[in-house]
Length: 251
Image (cartoon, rainbow, N blue to C red; front, side, top):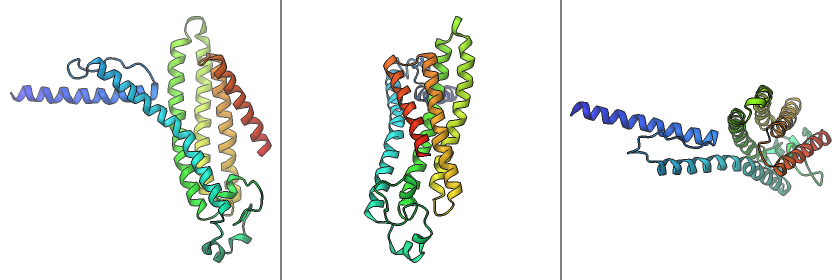
């Protein structure tokens, strides 16, 4: 009885590990669920349900990459133009005379993001949103990296095998650029203009320039591998071109 009980506990432990492995594979590789489980404890319908749940998690992560920065921008811009930075704390510190940019109150019809997160309390709110968004940026970069590697192994075979090395090199370069871009986003939130303008601009350059280059490399991978439909590839190419132009103009 003791041996039977120990065997049953070990079997349940193994299946729990297999369940966790399956969720990770589906979430980050978006692949079909292999039959990892003991057929009596984890039948195929259950595995398919896990696959659907994991795909929802992955889609939620991608959606948060868009929602969180948008909410942060709208919040900081609204509070900034509402005049919340013109408070007693900032006035006592005489920050308005040290400010580089729009100061405590809006001086321009349209201000840059750096101006809206320059002082308390919008600086704290903006830092929180940007830091959370940077985390989901990096998580999305990782998901994209794994997904492209998997599709490259599936599609670039035979006569197309030579392109796999090129895609791999582009993937490594894109991963480095994406990581540096995420680091730059956190730096923008940590160093406001009135604290250290040099570091703030350097971090902003990392975020925008390297982020744009990351998108360019991913667009190049789309064109090489034809991962999506022609319409989607053309849309991404147009968006990438707009990013390049806007980055140059804003610079």
